[in-house]
Amino acid sequence: MLFFYQAIHEVQEFTLLCVRAIVNLFQKPRYFQDTFTLMEVIGIGSLSIIVLTGFFTGGVMALHSAKSLKSFGAVNLTGQLVALSLVRELGPVLTALMIAGRVGSGIASELGSMVVTEQVDAMRALGTDPTKKLVTPRMIATTAMLPLLTVVADFFGLIGGWLVSFYTLKLNTSLYWNTAIRSLSYNDLLEGLFKPVVFGFIIGMVGCYFGLRTTGGTRGVGRATTQAVVMASILVIVSDFFLSKLILEFRY
Image (cartoon, rainbow, N blue to C red; front, side, top):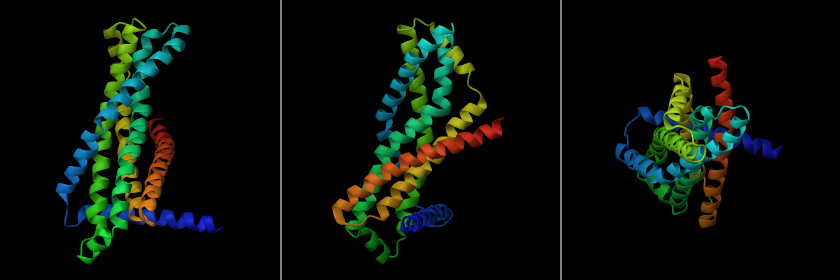
């Protein structure tokens, strides 16, 4: 019973933090410089890992799908399979998980260090709202950059699938790209960009939440970082299921 009450309390605190962060969007002051700096750090700093993740994911998908497609005589549909799987599902989810590990942990450790060194208390003493200064810019940055990083992952995933199809499966280049591009509809692209917006919001807010509730010195910072990564990853996977279900209901 105690665990149940604690869980309810955690959900309530997290929801209140999310509401305050969203309300801050419509109130002054607005820390544009901090937001743009964080967007650059998150976007440019994550490009390498996102490119590698997308490229090899597309390559692996082409390799594994070829065997199944050969049994049906449909190897020429490899581009379609890679494109749909990446844009609808694997691109957004894998990008979010990579960003949760890289950015979510960084947010939690940074804010946790500020809490244990009493910098956040100093902000309050000087009349600065920590939620407005620390949380809202990070929420905006992760929410804005994750869709862009997902597009990069999808693009390099298609390139990885093409290279495998061309050199391993001996598939014609124009055939691969035509089937890949023509298989994508407006709804697929919309789904592939809507999910990262939600995932980015989750990652940013979870990192801020666990960072601001850090206790116990440096050991607490490590614990908060681990909790942020684990919880953000779980929420990304769980929300992906419900978002997919919701999108399918509207689509059909």
